[in-house]
Image (cartoon, rainbow, N blue to C red; front, side, top):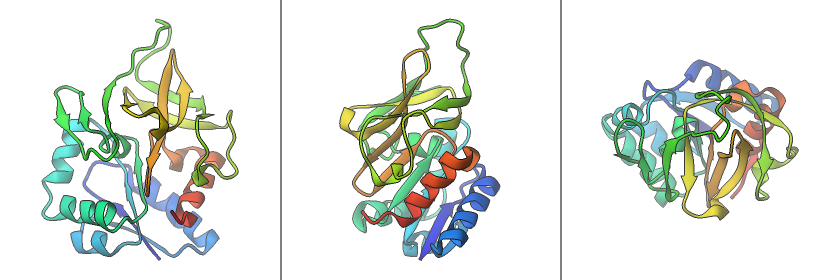
Length: 212
């Protein structure tokens, strides 16, 4: 099995690669590679899209690389390969991002990415650090994970899903902030699983063994 982590110069690739490679080795889950090669993405059994920075810049990098976006869409939409978006990689699954300017996304999960606006003025933005997950729906990615387990976040915008059934987990940060989304063979995590210690490594293992 080959898991491809997409390199489009918009993600913390070193940390993500090391975490996925470690878990894959420990669980006999095949090979993990970092790639910007559309042919490799097209052949991969599982695909991970990380992302750091602003939504428009990440979208421009992803869509501007020859054949990469088309290969990703073919693999996920047509071939139904398991997909995981991380941080802005999750946000790109939305219909629309509203950071700086309105920017279209992949439209895999209906909704928009908007600024976090805590109802407590003492809470700072960006939302940075550890927060406790609240699981909203059962999913194989949560095997061994419970409400109250914590994950590491760094973001100023969050995903407002159009269909509440596609929000699988959230955190409380002066109001609900989406943490995990999913539908079909697609998953997204707003937090960084590679930085989330036991919780993150368990969810990476669950993704690598998931058979949707």
